[in-house]
Image (cartoon, rainbow, N blue to C red; front, side, top):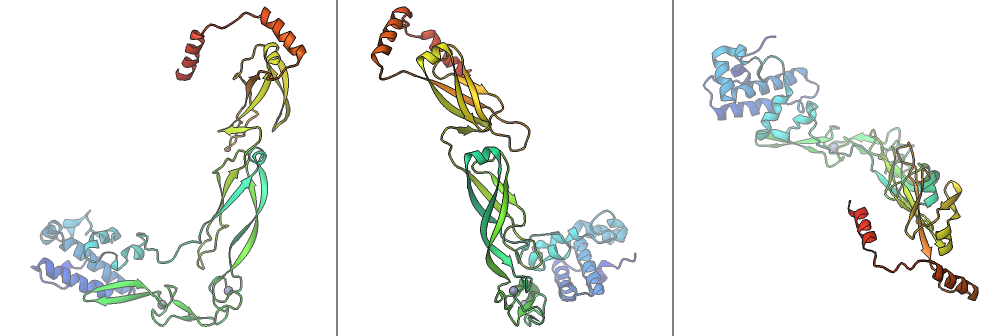
Length: 372
Ligand SMILES: [Zn+2]
Ligand SMILES: [Zn+2]
């Protein structure tokens, strides 16, 4: 590879000062900028060469080394053989984004003139508690934009509807000249598309898309909860031609259940028992999401005791297992009793030990349960 002398490349004397270097580089950069020389490989090479020369000569250390040893003095640095596009990032103070180096050399500065994809949509879906536990498939109808099939989204009649934008000559960008700087802007006449609609599409009247109601089947997996977002890739609005459509997010809201409350993957419910059932034990039928379950209330159950039915709760969303059902037992004292019941209770009162001592130890234990 034959490397030209950097001073020759920029066309300056060997004792050129910083201002002279900068001015010379700007002149070269403007002259050989790829934007102004589309498809011209030679101009691109000259442009890179000038950038490389400037990156070396504008750095006092590199310049001193180059002056003494020539190209050999620079191996391993930005001035070494070959072109390193990252040297351009050093120039942001001089030319920076005005030229859009990022785009040209794929350095990705995120200069989005047009959206790269369609708009995301949101759909709020209310489902029953049962469906959230068991999972379901629901058909929904969403209003959204559909790409016009006649013009494929361009908005122009298929055969001869488009014409090249005269302002930017199809480039989609306009270069403004300001003193020695050139500034690229997205063309305002064509919106950066480079083409103008001569004859609007008869189907969409030039919009490129049509409003429609679309029916979609949403698979709701077992275990979803209020706030769960289900993503339907590509079911959002269409983007500009050639880009991918947005996504549809179905946001779940689970309706309340008359019996069960959910806490994470566990279900909680309350069953009342009377004093006799609590004292003697009982069997109570509970309708769960797995059908009727016989719940054994053991002898001597206290109000607030919890009976756990393992694995009958809500399935974990990511698969593998389920939560439990927690049955909270509440002992109800009858508020109205018959004469017969009164007689029996009075008998019972005589037989039962009176436990009217303040329950210090019991309380202490409850506290322990809470805090330890
Ligand atoms: Zn159309
Ligand atoms: Zn234009």
